[in-house]
Image (cartoon, rainbow over all chains, first blue to last red; front, side, top):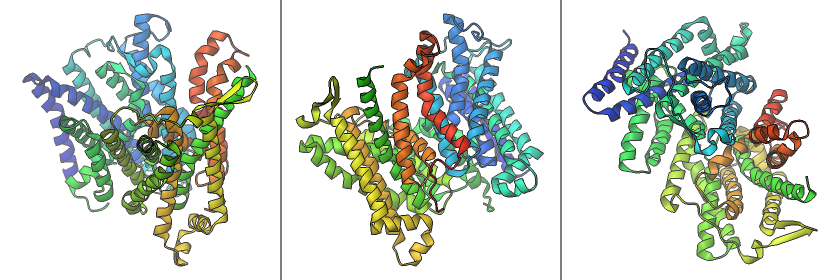
Length: 319
Length: 307
């Protein structure tokens, strides 16, 4: 067993066991923290597929998360207040399908345009499209606009109730494990090989007869759909959603998790999410200005420490 | 649609376009010459506004405050280049983005600590507070005309600087071949620092000009930076001419779209449908334009000739 596999197992067991144990021993607060962590880790894992393995620096990933959350909020809103009968429902299956579908479709539409470019253009365009989604939601008064939307009823499933925090946590946790397995499966497949090959040298892949654009687009859509799923969970967790979820600093935080944890490793985004949540929680205890040390740390990591935490913990020399 | 409203909104669009140009020109200069992506460029815009606001309150003169804030903002830009950007030139764009994202958090939080969470209003002198009657009942605030005048003057100055001075020649040379420029004995690091400071001063100027209208506030930089990105993507990254034309285009389309789109929509759909869809479409308008431009010209409308 390599050190990295060991690290992955240890981290995943800790993330899965510690919060419920703390919850049962009377520290309910930590379960809330862990649920948010796990949901963010799913979003970061989806970003890792395109950023880490595909080399596509998307700075608009929060838009998919936000769209996923609104795919839960909007049907629930109509179910309660009427209108839009076609989508008015509290059924979790329909909502999740909507979240995945809408986020995936948005990824397809924007991906068609932004994948025609690379490098800086790609970074800026993904940012711009995320901002477009932000302003779109902001401009629709029925869904609260700037004030956001309260989700009165959580998604309903047959056997589980998301109103129970422990069930919500385990749903998120199992989803994270499945998301990690899916990403791993994709990465190790022929498709994933082409994707990674195109990261290193797109011309070579094109010369070998692969249509790099199509491969990247498919990966981009999968990643967006997965982030939409994370958004659906996040909406159920917070029960309050607002355009602020799509703000580009949210996308920046997701990128932070992937890069700081260790891009193109399975467990990197999870570790990144742990570090982010712990930092946010720890620093905000001391000062309301916690973004200052957070920002300084981010700059220090970029300037002086490369390869992220996984890189440090497994001491890979080949970067 | 009455003409008076159309004229006023066109002037507003022109004003937005010129402010966007001031922000975007710095971004495009820094990217074109230094190959550096500076997300924190919007924070320099915000800092300009706060410096100017504070100095106006201290000195009691907006114009004097503006003139002093310009070099201060340029100095901040120089420091950013020296300590954040310079170590990262050899890295890829992802590192630029992450480091300057960290820088935004730092600058925003420091601003919050120094000036508090509230916005800071900028008092204007009486002679700028009035209104000018263009003709009939078409009235515009004097200050908005001043913004347009100052924006045009800064744009003209920048064109002159880049196209007709020795410094501009070096900047253009640095953009097309930096190794050659430094081989010819030019201190390229100094040149880079100057370009960064110039870009910061231009962004700061935009912040100073808008502050009396919107107040200096913490989120202002993060709002404009994305629109500035749209401008330089449409214009072609690295091209000042492209940034100018795209900025005016985006400024006018955004402003006119927000005010007149529902009127245009009523021509071919029911008033209710127009009223419901117009805000959403006008919010997306500039991004749709960006997508259309990219679909046909991925390199932007006016890509720089030599790169």
